[in-house]
Image 1 (cartoon, rainbow, N blue to C red):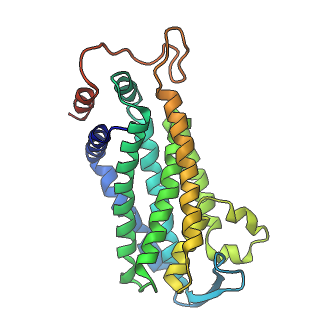
Image 2: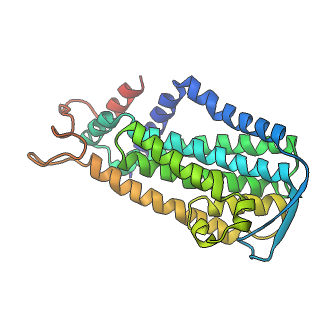
Length: 284
């Protein structure tokens, strides 16, 4: 893997995202709207729920508003990073084909997109965590931030997976919304988990480990190492599969070999020009 090409790919991906000013605005506006709605509709009554990653007998008693703020903050980070990741893969498929024909490796393109996604994940996660002290102060702010970033990691890698396996935007949006609503937007709420009958199903969903890191850090001093490692492994699995699918779609095919993305095969690019020149023209 050539780091110079990864750096150029990262820069062009960031430039492409920066052109969508409305999207950039939404990345910070949506968490703000979610927090505002929670503050307006929740109460300060005390609720109790299980910290499942510690033990089934470990109970946290906190205000309803504090629990809802951490939960909705994690949901916003996961949802937004998944959408951005899916867009990174689905947009510019033909340009990516040309870059591969010019000498770029599919792994370098994925690494560039992943680096840009990490920037988005950190900005949105840090913003969502920084807004929490306006309403309450988590027990461990850095641990809560780590949980938000872990949620962005898992759902960002899921977004890459969806973008690699689904070719059309509408189907990709439905895949992201369906899982996010059921998982991070519903079943991972500790209040629902505490009363659920089949908790094993919830523990197998992508947002289980990020939600546990966030909740345990925000409301206790217990260790989150196991949940952290579980979340990293979960996201890493999505990433490996996404890279394999992206490589299969982008690989250069011999004459007469059918293409996965077009019946005519990948777009032709003449021998003139380097891969870096093509990437620069894409970002110009």
